Structure formats: structure tokens, C-alpha cells
Length: 475
Image (cartoon, rainbow, N blue to C red; front, side, top):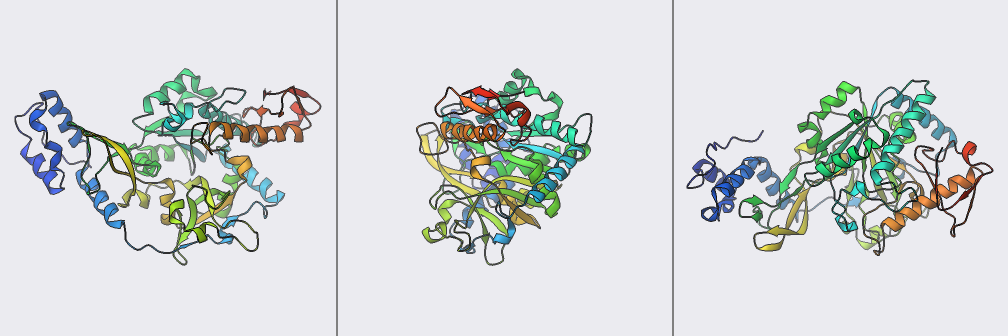
């Protein structure tokens, strides 16, 4: 609960004494440094901005996060191979059983999907929400549309498998103050990509003031704090404050499929992964891919301390020997990249009470121009140490991991590289289903998510047919 500040006037001659004293308690009285130069309207904006903050909570986060820097941490160990369901060990019987279990749970309304979509496409050269981005597929579909159509496909597959008239998967989409309005308008203008409007719920993640290295709030203007989103780990607090945990309970959801917006191959509501999660009976599970090369700049799954819990660390925390560690039995790099999470819904989560946030040194807009400061954020995987049980599910990069993070011309994770991964996978599907491609070198096609979720049911469409590439294959 935010604390009342006792503000009653739009314009006052001096800062409210009670409020000034409270800011002094937390070492943040500099917020009033330029008070005498502000107009009545600007003073009102500043008071409202201060009143919107939970000062004691933010102070606790700042103190704990700064104090944690430089403290000794438990040694990093690779995750035991026994915790990972590897691609090599998975049998067709396993996959078929999990697929059926997943479709059954979907048909019973037990699954909700949760998209983390607070980021803008700034690094892609766009100010739009990242999900609006089109990586250049023949269909011209955005990331949002690809994900929506995969949800539609799973709904159809579940209805067919269980002889249900209709099946609905509710889609929760976490935006940020910077993307919320544009995201809603994008969905409205595209008629929710075939989904029902009432099966999509938008909610905003929180923001938190940016700070200087000594923990003081950075002022973006003389009457406004510089703020940034609190990270995708803020989803837990946002779900609770938006009363959406109650909403999921009302809908009968037991499981949530949580994923990021910037993966062109993400398998939203994957029945196989859901079935695996249910079969294992764990509180949380994540999809992982093997690191492509030792210096790959991605967070990896580790154990923190001998016998410790599963967690994720940044690539910068791995020294060269650990980053290059190889499993002697498999010959592969020992550390995995986490891409996708399942959680059992719970009304409480330890992460929302955690006061240690990650600190990222960034250029912060301030009254002195851009200045170096700190942004505070939590990550979705920070919740893993709080889960009583976890499991990892290995998937193949070329089938499920096509990140879209950097503009074309960068060395990795670009729209061009993501598009190529999608085209190569879907072309393999078409050829495996007996289809042929012509009029393009290389010969690439894409398959509509409405037509096939993971390459299934394509024989009746593709066998014996020749498609003029590049193209999108649909019903």
C-alpha cells in the first residue's frame, strides 16, 4: 500500500513539510532541489509523481540491491543432466503421451498463456512495441500475429482431439507504460488476429525510479523522476496488483505458459511441453537450448552453490573455463540457455517480496542531459530459487529459438537471421510432407500457424504439390 502524503493543494509556496521530512528519511530530499523555479502546474506534477511512489518499498530495494554488490556469492555449478529432459533421450512414446496430456488440459480450460511484451523495438530501429515487428516472412505477419495464430491452432487441435465444440485459451499480455496504448490499438486494428477480444487481457508492468550510483533518484526533469520498467520479473507483482490471479482462478486455469515476445519460433501453448510439465508434477519448468558457442552472450541455467537451487546467471558471471565446460559423455557445452517457462499458478510468489534487484548501468535521461546511472529490474527466471521443484526440457534451437533482438547488420539475433530460421524449418516440414518448391534459390517457404503447429497434418496439403517459393502455405 502506498502511504498517504497529505497533499491538498495544487500549488503551495513551499514543499509540504510532511512530504519533505519523509523524503529526508530516505535520503531523497533532492527531489525538491528546483522547487522554487517550478510553476504551480509543475509543482503539482512533481507532488503527484512523489505520491505515486511506495517510498519505503523502493528504499528497501535500493539499499538491498546496492548492498548486494560485491558480496560473496555461492559458486556456480552446471545443472545436473538428470534435471534435463534431453532431446536424445526422448522417445516417440513420450512425445505422443505428453502431446495428448497437454491437449486434454487445454480442452479442460486449465492453461493460460502469458506474454511478456513490455519492450519497444528500439534496437530494431522502431519505436513500436516489439511484437508489432515483421521479420520479413512472405506472409508479412508480425510477431504478435504469429503467436495469436499458434494459439488458434492449439485451440483447434485440442477441440478435435477431445471432440469438444470449442476450446478457449486465455491470453494475458504484459505491456509497459511505453507500449500499452500502442499494443492495444494494434490488436484492435487487426481484429485480435482471429481471437475473441474478451480472451485477451492487457496489463501493465510496474516502473521504478532510476538511481545514481549512490542510490539517489535521477530527475528526468525538475518535476519528474526518470523511471524504467521493473523488468519482466515484475510480472508477479503486476499480476497480483491487477487482481489477475483471481481472474485466472475464476477461469479455472491451473498452469501458465510464460514467454517473451521476441522469438519468431516460440511454440505458444505447446501441448508437448505442457504434458511434460503435468507429468513431472513440478512447480515450474523451463525450455532450454544448448549454448551455441562458449562466448554466446545469453543468460544460462546453473546451480548456485553445491546442491543449491536452479537459477539463471548472466554470461558475464561465467569465467572462460566454465563457459567452455563440456559434458564428457555428450561432448556438448554443459550450460543451457532458458527460453520459455511454465508455472503452476499460485497466489503468492517469493519473488514479489524479494528486495534484491539486478542493477544495470545505463545512460539515464536527466536534467543535466544523459548521465550514467542505474536501472533496477527483476527477471522472470529469478523466481526459480523459490519454486519447490523444477524441471528443464531441452528443445532444438533450429526448431524453437529464433530471437529478434538486434537490427539487421548486427552479428546475431536479427530479423534476417530469425526469418531464415523460420523459412528453413518450414521448408523441411513441406518436403517431409511430400511437397516440392520451385522458383526461388534457395527454395524457402513458410507454413501458416493456422495450418500446422509443429509440422503435423501437412500431408493432405503438400503431398505431390509444387509450391512457388517464397510463399506461405495455408489451407
